[in-house]
Length: 335
Ligand code: GDP
Image (cartoon, rainbow, N blue to C red; front, side, top):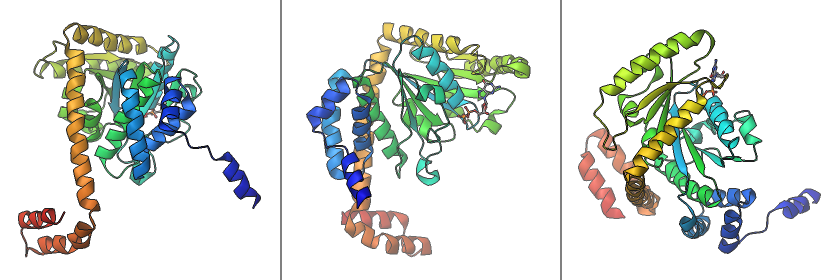
C-alpha cells in the first residue's frame, strides 16, 4: 500500500503542449526528456501531442551543426564522442548526442544503452545524451531521432551528434539527417574486415582513423594515405568539398581538434555556396516521403483484415500456389 502511494507521489504531473514547449525553449532538460519520451511512444495520444510540440518548436530549431558518426563496433565511437564532445563543451558548445541503432529492439539497447559509456559527457552540464529509441523498424527509429533533433535544437543545443553502428542501412538514415557525415576507421584492418561498404565510404565527408597512438601511429599514417587515395577514386562532390582523411587518438586527444576543424571548414565552404541550406531542404523533403511510407506501411500491417489473412496468403506464396505479385495485390486490396 505504502509503495503504491509512493509511486503515485513520484509520478510527474502531466504537462500541456504549451508547458512542454515553454520548458524546452527554456532549456529544461527534464521537460526535454519527457517530450522525447512522447516522440518515442507508441501510444496514439502521445504521438499526437508530440507532433504539436514539434510543430511549435520548429521555428526555434535548425540553428545547429548536425554531425553523423559511424563505424563498426570497437572502432572507438563512444570514446571518440567522449573526447570530441568534451573538447566542444570545453569551448562552451551545447552538445546533444543521439543514436540510431536499429538492433536495439532485439538486443535491448546495444549502443548508448550502456551506462558506463561516455561517463564524462554524461556528467557534463553542457551535454545531453539520449540512447537510441527502440522500434520495430529502422524507419521508425530514424524518424524519432530526426524529431528529437528538432526538440534538442529548440532547447538550445548547437551541436548535434547522431551515432550509429557502421554495419548496415542505418548509415543512409543518418546521412539523410546530418550536415556532416564522419566515418571512423581502424588502421591495419582491411575494409572487408571492418564491414564497411563502398557506399558508406562514398557518403563520408571525412574519415577519421582512430586509435592513432602508441604502436599504432605508423599504421594509422599509412592507412590515412590509403584511404585518401581510395576517396580520390570516387566522383567529385557537387558541393566542391573533397572528403578528407584524418588520424586521431581519443586517449591522447591528438588530432581530435583537427577532426572538428574539418567539420567547420566544410560548413564554411558549403554555406558560402548555399549548399548547406539546400541539403537541409532536400532532407526535409526526403523525411516527408519517408514518414508517408512509414505511416502507410504501419497502417497496412495494423489493419485487422490484413493481419487476419496475411499468414494464410503468405503460406500459399511459399507453397508456390500463389504468385508473390498476386498475393501482394490481394492483401493490398484488403485495406
Ligand atoms: P565503439 O564500440 O565503436 O563505441 O568503441 P569504444 O569507444 O567502446 O572503444 C572500443 C575499445 O577501443 C575500448 O577498449 C577503448 O578503450 C579502445 N579505444 C577507443 N579509442 C581509443 C584510442 O584512441 N586509442 C586506443 N589505444 N584505444 C582506444
